[in-house]
Length: 251
Image (cartoon, one colour):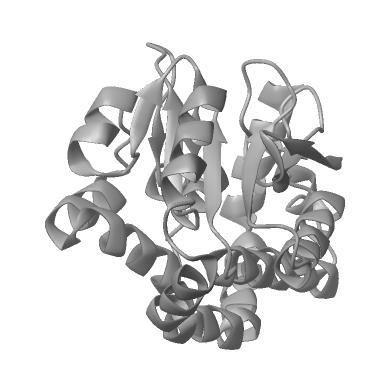
């Protein structure tokens, strides 16, 4: 489901999603990501991390719809709380996190990209990125809306969120949603960490914590309440019908 490996230098770790064929973000994957954050921030010898995929031409297809179909309400609530709290941990990670997107990053894929410090996307005509939840009759939780606003500004974010817009790599670069578009993500990541190495790690960590502390706490604190709203929506007959059709199409 997930692996951690050393790359570039012993101080930089790669968190590789490995759940073929589509890297669905199931319970086990989020649990492993959460454990990885604890390991990385708790190990003095680790100076940064990369979130990426070991599945060729795939970043992630997003949340596991099997969790949504005819669920036990308590189990579904627990799943959402895990999703939200793991996202908060990634966002609040003190050490730098680069995100390599091998291909499309929509819905939860875009969510994972937004928590990073440096977003790198493959230069592909097939790839898109965005939070297009409204197209599937879901609304983004307020904290996820705010993450997008923080990155691309309110004008772009409001239009994108309401209309369910997705962006090509180059369009995403033009509005600041990604930081680098390339066909050599590994080199781009290496260049990023080499540039950071000229700045003392402790100063960077303390500054990042100061910038993200309040938002991280807010995402954590609202997880249970957001989970209640999520469960209420997913359990509606219309939502269950949509989930059933989506699963049938995927199979």
